[in-house]
Length: 190
Image 1 (cartoon, helix red, strand yellow):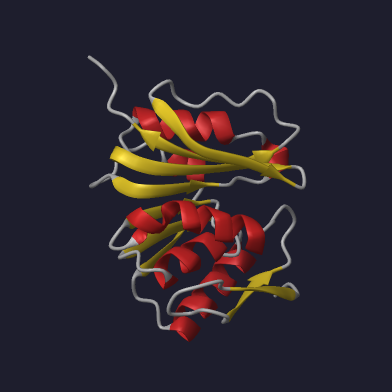
Image 2: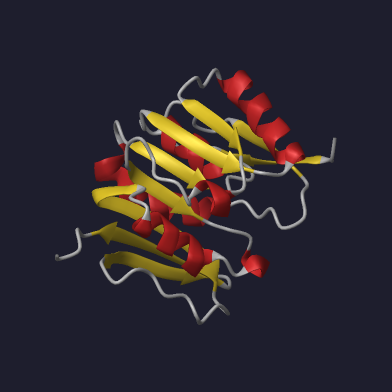
C-alpha cells in the first residue's frame, strides 16, 4: 500500500481525530481552513442530511459531515489505495453511516438515484477538468434534492466552469489558488 498521510477532523463527535489517507497522485484533501468555512456555511443544514461525496479521496468531507451530524454519506472513489484507507478509517471510527462505493464518478452519475441527496460535495482532481460535466450530470439525473446544497471546489485557474442555470450561489470564497462555492438547487421552472 502507498505511504499514508493524515489530516484532522475539525469538529463534532470525531473532533481532533486523525484521518489517514493514501499518498495517491491527484489526491488533494480539502484543507482545514476551507473545511471549517464550508461546514460553518452548512451548519444549519448538516444535521440529519444525506450526503454524496464525489471523488472522495481522503474522505475528509464525508467524515467531517458525519462527525457534525449528517445521517448518511455515500463516498465515491475509484483508486484502490484510497478505498483501502477509507475503509480502514470507517472501521476505526465505527462509522456504519458511511457507504464507500468503488466507482467511476462520471459513469455512476449517468444513472438516477433511488433518492436525491441533501448535500453534494464536488471536488474532483483539478487536472482532470471534470467539474462542469459532473455538475451537469448531477442536475440532469436528479441527484440533488430541491433546495439541496452543492459544494464545488476548483482551481482558481479554471475559468471555464459553468454550473447549471438553476443553481444559485449562496457563498463563495478563494484561498491559496482554490475557489470554493456553495450553491443551492432551485427547482427549474417548467
